[in-house]
Amino acid sequence: MPITPLGFNALKTLLKGNGRVTVANRGAEDSGLTILAAVIVRHKSSGAPSRQAILGLDLRPDEAEAMEPAESTDQLFDGIEVLLRVSTPGRLGIRDIYIATQPDAEPARQWEVGLRTDEDAAEEGEFTIPESPGLVAYLRAIA
Image 1: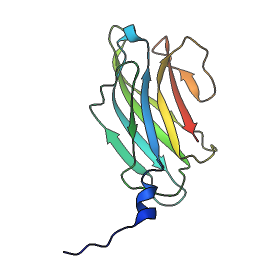
Image 2: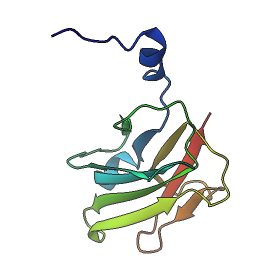
Image 3: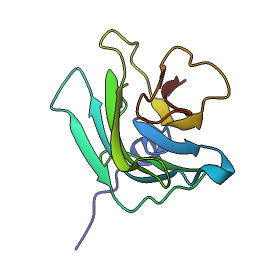
């Protein structure tokens, strides 16, 4: 069966990383913090939001994994929502943490979302997790 090649420009789009979300565990080595799963919703001005669930992440401290959207696009995304399922042995066990871009945020191409220890005060786009003293959730747009 003959094929119709997409061509150089169409394939190059796949390398731009539009919609890439890197989920990162920046917790302390001895914290036992593990990111078990993530749900990512990407919002564009046109069309329905794209949804992606990643189960079985098992991200330990100092580990990260990049998630690409199912369909590549040249358009920037207006924002994202992320739900992280995490485990902290010895604290509160398994629970879900929700974080999202502000409604008026600048459109972006890529983000990093994750958890870190609260050695430094929370900055813009970060918040201390009330039920988990010592942990900060963050969401940052990347270029």
